[in-house]
Amino acid sequence: MNSFEYIEPRTLDEALAAGGAAGAVYLAGGTNLVDLMKAGVARPARLVHIGRLEGLDRIETLPGGGLRIGALVRNADLAALAERYPLLVEATLSGASAQLRNAATLGGNLMQRPRCGYFFDPASACNKRQPGAGCDMIGGESRGAAILGASPSCVATHPSDLAVALLALDAVVEIAGPAGRREMPVDAFYRLPGDEPQRETELAAGELIVAARLPASEFAGHCRYVKARDRVSFAFALASAAAALRLDGGVIVEARLALGGVAPKPWRAREAEAALQGAKPSDETFAKAAAIALAGAAPVGDNAFKIELARRVAARALKLAAAGTRIPALPASPFGAAR
Amino acid sequence: MNLAISATLNGVRRDVVFDDPRVTLLDLLRERLGLTGAKKGCDRGQCGACTVILDGRRVNSCLVLAATCEGADILTIEGLARGETLSAVQAAFIEHDALQCGFCTPGQIMSATAFLSEGGDWRDPEAIREGLSGNLCRCSAYAGIVEAVQAAGRRLETRKDAA
Image 1: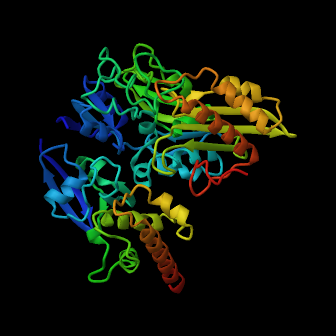
Image 2 (image 1 turned 120 degrees about the vertical axis):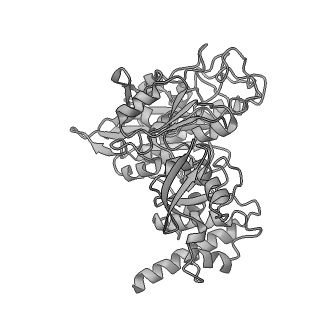
Image 3 (image 1 turned 90 degrees about the vertical axis):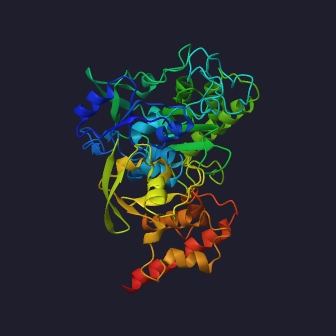
């Protein structure tokens, strides 16, 4: 780990002032950043520890029934929202381990870097770490690579589960920076790699996520997160799906579908959503929607299996959502959950 | 760069001075405070051998920078027993043979202690396996670990009922 200057600001304004300097990085729970520093991938000149700032660790109900979740709310504490936002809770509880969820914050979860092995290895070529260096995953061990939204510069996937649920629920990210406050939908917050894979989000230098806002809960009765992975707990998604439905008189009046583990950002499947609207829930309906969601998918090397896997995970999530919300002992597990 | 934190460690207030912001809580405990119960397995947040309870929450101490611990309340495996009396989880691990080499055991016990205090469903083996998935055991003593957590959960509930 490189050495760095350590700063512990007392207020958000002090944090923003300290975070604007070249080489400065914000530290909250540290579960990703400290790991990246140990790997030699992150080499900040200055760490600005925001973990103790007051006022950013609250969950507030908004007028009209929405919710505002402070950036420093720990992942584990989102479990308190199981009644109103079970999709968010199932997705969050399916991520990482209990220890990591206790330390990891909402803001840090959204800012996670990819878990691509080549990104994590400074001896490998990675355009994200070193623009122009090339990508060793292309032609290398690409089993986990993206099947949607990738570019010749980068095929890494976004690792978050929580962000997939936030995307499905139309969440908005609130940002503070040296130039003031702004906000944007989760979908617009993330960038596709294109020819600038080093830029993963729209955050500018010195900017900080302060909260995520959710509209009033409309999907609590019919939503599920399903995640296929190499082991049933404490593993990143090979493919995951957040599905949420509003049903009326046996017909789907509104559908949400977002995918994880398959693209460089949490992936919203809007065309599949449109195809579900007005349809009757059935295996056929869900298979068709899942096929639409993956229509543009393309493999990288050996990972064509992920296309079929993601299709089945999406169809399963929709089917389980239609059957009714439930958070099992193994959150998001595709096993033992079919009805 | 000199850093100083004041923290409560196993119930005792400690003032600690160290010289490098790179020091993790795990290294502070093991190398500077002589508390070698928490183990350094992977040092990357994947194995759970370094689990301690920080401000009431189980965390991987290898991923916590010591500098961030000003005012913190830290409980390690060394602080669980009352004198010679083991905690319910410690005793259950021995009774159910929930270990082989023992390297992961302090982390397993701290994690299981937190799982029970969080209200984890100790009646459901699946919930225990999920709740302790952040603690790896290379000897694969998982069957005994699940039994031990169930036994400790039962014992703690009996005590609660009696009180």
